[in-house]
Image 1: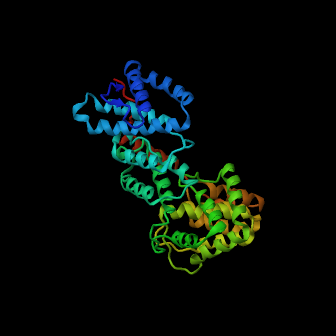
Image 2: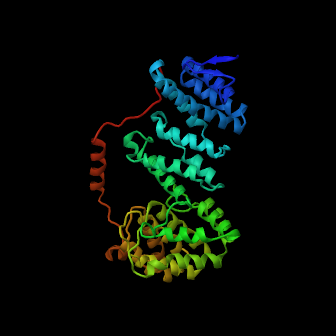
Image 3: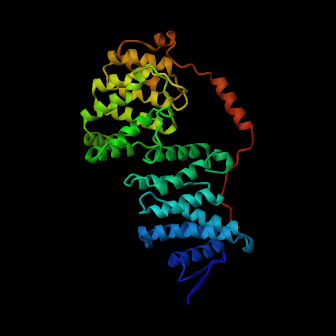
Length: 396
C-alpha cells in the first residue's frame, strides 16, 4: 500500500478521499517548512497552471479536511496551529468565484469557516454567492448558511475577518443570500420585502425565471452607487422582465408606503429596495419615478438600514428634468442628510442648472456643514484607544 506522511503527521493512502491532493499538500507543507513564505509564492502559480479547475476544487476540499483532521488530533501533534495556518493561507489564495464548486463542497467550506478559528480571517461568501448566481438555495445549504450567520456576531473584534469593513461585507452578503430561501417563513411585519418575496414565490414559468435573474443581480456587497457593469447586466434582466411588468410590480410593491403605516426594513430588505430603485432608474419612465418618490413620505418603525435606500433615490432623480427633480431632491437632502455626498452633489449640480448658487443653498441650510476640528478629534480619539496592529503571517 502506498503511504505518504506529511510533516504535520497526516497519513495519505489510496483509500483517503482526494489522495492526490493530500500528497500535494504534504509536499507543500515540507516546502513551506523549509523555505517559509517563498514556498507559498512559488506554489500558487504552479498549482494554478498545472491543475484544472476541478482539481483546484479538490485541493481546497482537501485543505479543509486536513485542517479538520489536525484539529481532531491536535493533542498528539507538534505545532498543530502552525500547519493549519500554512494550509489556511494556501486556501485563501486559491479561493476563486469561477471555480466549479458543488453544493456539498460549499457546505464543507462554510462549516470549516464556522468551526476552525484559523479560517476566520477570510470567508466563503464570494464562492457561495457565485454558486447562487446560477443555482437555487437548497435547504441544506441554507441551513449551513444560517449557522454561519448566527456565529458571525461580534465582528472583526472577535477574530473574524481582518477589519470591520470586511466583516460587514460578509454579513451583508449572507443576509442577501438567505433572502432567496423560499422555505423561510414570510412576515411582512418583520420586513417590507417579505411582500416582494411572497409575490415572487407565487410566480411561475418564464415570468419567475426572469424575476429570479433580476433579484439574483441584487448583491449584499454592492457599492454605494451602481457601476457601469452592474447597469449593463441590469438592463438585460430588466428587458427579460419587461418594462410594463416591472412598472406594475414596482407600483404594487411600493403601495404600502402610500398607506402611511410604518414599515420595517431588514438588512436584506434594504438591499432589495435599493436594487429595485436602481432598476427603476434604468426604465427612464416618469411613472416609475413618481412611484419611487412615495418613499419620501414613507414612515419607518426604525430608521436602521433605511439610509442606503433613500440615497438610491438619487439614481431615480437623475432621470428627471431639473425642474421636476428639484422639489423632491430638496426634501431628500433635508430629510436624509448623509455622509455619502451623493445627494448633495446632485443638489449642487441641479441647482447650478436652475441658476441657484451655492451661497443660496447654504443660506437655506441645504449644504452639510463639516466641523473639521471635531472630525480630527474623533479620529485621534479612535487612534488613541489602543495600538495599531499590523498582522503578518507567522513563520516558524
